[in-house]
Length: 239
Image (cartoon, rainbow, N blue to C red; front, side, top):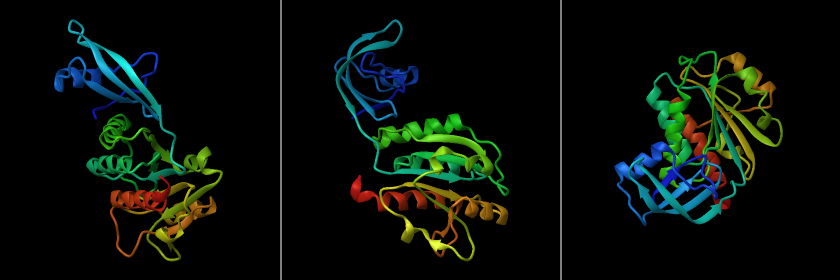
């Protein structure tokens, strides 16, 4: 199955974006009769075939053969993480967390973070590539650098949400033993310098549980992937 992405695809107008069109016709050299599976990142799958190729403008006419809608999982996972200093590592995390079905990633502007800016446009392209590769139907929401006071005001943190903050320190409980299934989740992961004591205190005041990710000290991106896999695992029987 050849998966393509177009957020603007519809039953009335099945088509490819300019980038995906170039990939289909110029790189893959698809022709009349070839099937294309288009996802919009919102749960829709459009099964189409190439009906006609228009060489002058390097376009094609697609025939819609079937439209399917896939509902979301019975849980929602929001990963809040301070970006790493190394760009490659945070890009790796976005790719892998997307493949595992993360629903939202918020990049935290914490006291000890060294990277103050991220390229959300590039990260979204990585996420799009990941949902196509893993054949998923929902594109995760990526939220640019956010200060903690603004993060705590997010609407999806207010009701029926299991909230935890992972950090190195005493009086933390193991994350794996405390994740309820079929829930909404938000797990906070700090940068290489961890969260500051001030940030830990204010997170606990906002209802976040103090957790740890085992006895070893993990890199930021590894911790983010660990949390993603933990949430997926506890809900794996219901997917």
